[in-house]
Image (cartoon, rainbow, N blue to C red; front, side):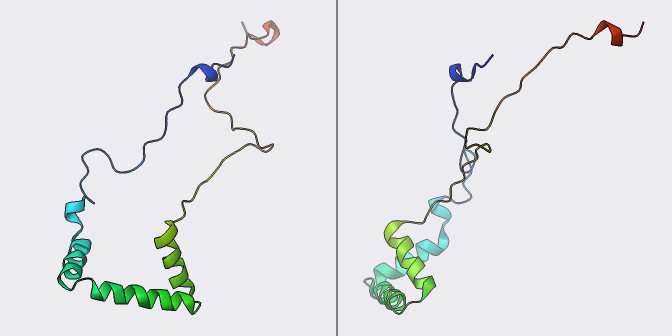
Length: 108
């Protein structure tokens, strides 16, 4: 008996538990300092850094190419898909089978 079609599929929880402020925007000190410096200098240094990164990417530096790609397109998200040997979905759930013992195997 397969009741999987009747059950609601729940999405897995992702990220920190509710109330966890370990990486809240207020605690991102490094980013805050960089933003303040950038504003004070009218973004000149950040612009120069971006130009250097762009130049290195144009020269073929793989790290710079990856960084530019990540900044333009966003980082690639790794996905994993688990399937059975024939490509079908993996079985999930627990099945219980009750078997009546054979009378010849029952000791008395």
